[in-house]
Image (cartoon, rainbow, N blue to C red; front, top):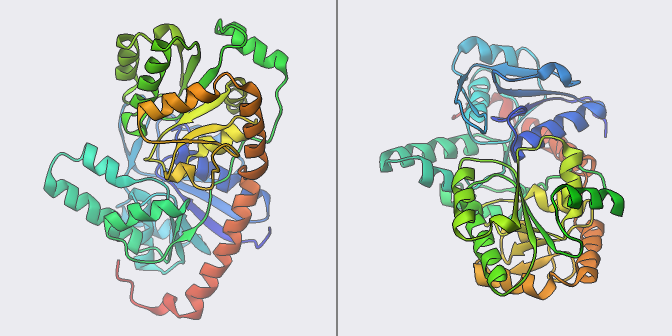
Length: 399
C-alpha cells in the first residue's frame, strides 16, 4: 500500500471528541501515513484538542463550541481564505466522513478548484433530524443540506449494504460502494488472571454470566430493550451482570430507569473510557456483547468484541447484523425485549457455546484497519482515474 497520495481526511468529530466517526478518521490517517501516503485530518477546532500527540497533521478550522458531556464542536467553514488553504495544498483526493460541515467545506473548496471527493455515509442521520430539529421547515432544510452534501461527492461509500436505505430516505438516488470499517484492537487472548482481576474489582462472582453494552448512551440505540430484557431475566430468577460502557446525552435518564426497574444490583456503569486496551479487557471479561441497535450502519463495537473472542447479540436484519450467522459468528434476535431475554436465557449459562461462537467471530468477521484502509486506497486510485478520464476537472461544478 504505497501510492504517495495526498489525502484530506475530513471529519466533523476528532479526538478528544470520542465517537465512532472520530475513531474512523484517526484510523484512516494513521494507516495511510504509515504506508507512504500523506494524509491530513481536516476537522473543526476544539478547545480541548491535543493535536501535538499525533504523528500526522491535523488542520483545524473555525468552529462553534457546544459545552456538553460529549464534547462536540460545530464547524464553521465559511471564511474564504480557508478554502484556498486547502486548494494550495494540492490534495489528490478529499474524503469526508460525514455529510455535515466538513463536507460543505469540501464543496466550497471544489467551487475554486475541482478535486476528486469521496463521502462515507456512517450514520442514519434521519434519526437525528427527527429528534433534534423541532420544526417541519427545519427538518426539510436539514434534509436538503445533507442531500446536497451527499450528491456533491464524486463517489459515495457506505459501511454496510443495509445503510443504503437510509440514503434513499434522504433522497439520494445515486450509486454506492460498500467499504467496511476496520477494528483498531488487535486479535488477542486475555489470561484468566486478568479477567479475574476485573471481576474482583467489580465484585462479580465466578460463573455469573456477564453482558456488556458499549457505545453512546442514547435511547435510539435500543438500550431500553436491553434494560427490559435484563429485568425479565431477573424476574425469572436468572443471575447476571450488565456492564454499561460509554457515555451520552441520555445516560442520566438511563441510570434512573435502571433503578426504577430494580436493576441497580445487576448493573455496572463504567462511563467514559478512553484507554483502548482497557476497553478491550472489558470486552474480554464479558461473555456476550448486547447490541440491539437498528440505528447503526455498521457497529464498530461488534468487530471490537470479536477481536477478543466475545460474540454479539444483534437484531436480525439490522445493519450491525450484516454477515452474522446465527449460532456461528453471533446470535440474532427480534427487535423486542422478550426475544432478547429468550435468546439470552438459552445461552447465558452455556459458556462453551459462547466461547465457540466468539472464536468463530474472531476468525470470520474481524477485519483490521490495515485491511480496510488498503481496500480504500485501491478505491481512491479508481476514483481519481475516473475523475480525470471523464474530464470532471473541467466541468462546471453544480454544488
